[in-house]
Amino acid sequence: MEYTFKINLLSRNVLLKFLENHTLEQLNKVPDGFSNNLIWNIGHIVVVQQMLVYRLSGLPMMVSDAMVAKYMKGTKPEADVTLEEVEEIKSLLFATLEQSKKDFADDIFKTYNEFTTSAGYTVTSVKDAMEFNNYHEGMHTGIMMQIKKFI
Image 1 (cartoon, rainbow, N blue to C red):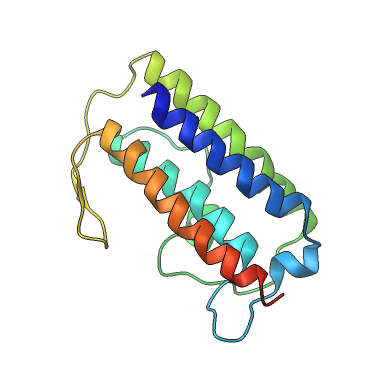
Image 2: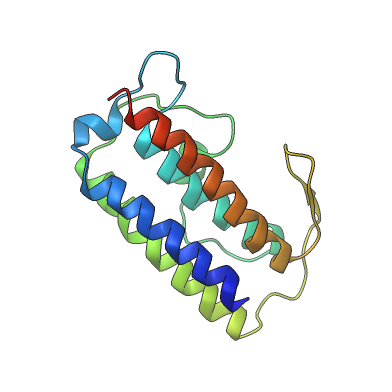
């Protein structure tokens, strides 16, 4: 799992650069032809990791129900995100990863509810969930690189 977490940290550092190098207006802009924006993608990444790893393990998540409702699959930006919300997402970007590392080391994951992703991959364990999460984050980072060209 060490390598999986190293890759996830790399991904999160790339996402941090998006947050640090774009204005609030740029983070909120939904370019023509896109259904979401930079900040939605980052919020979505945080929420999906928590759902894949914790919710499907039957454990409490570090994100609120309101955040899940705003960023889960099938949602899109309904209003501009505030600077305070950006700061919350920014802190969760690394806090969730650090907590996940600790929880894996502490072996708290005892059960897992199998889940088939929209990509057709069946996640059968929490270890699979973290590994699939890296694919998911990479896919959304690619979308963000495309959005960046139009803002």
